Length: 161
Picture 1 (tube, rainbow, N blue to C red):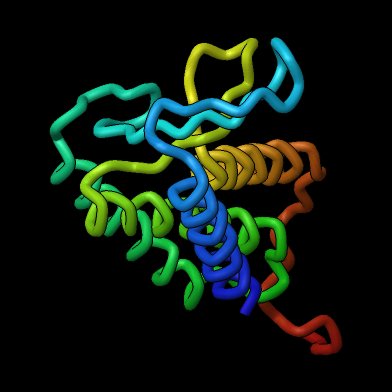
Picture 2: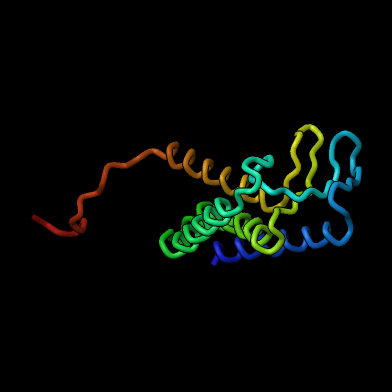
């Protein structure tokens, strides 16, 4: 259930934030929250991250569908005990869904998080994808750090030869 909760939760928060931005700002408008540090700037992004590949919406739609399909597949294949992995793919799936919705309904992605030390504007969905990928990297790192034990013999330990 963690995958579903994360994915749907991210999508809902992302939608709410984007609706707030769309209702209260016009494209290009910016609100200074912390001068020279953090602004809220409404941008309609026709491309991928950083506006790359503008006008190639179909590529991003297909990619998002593949990602969401992979997350749904993973939901049924990843053991329940793999909490970090399940959370990570849920966050990635939710972020992909959030931006997919924008591409299909609006034709562009609503971006609004403007950190002034970074020249690009992004959104909550983008952030959750990055956090999810970071958690996947952490999981891989932790798995490598755990000492590996030799495979146990397949025979039950209480049998005699």
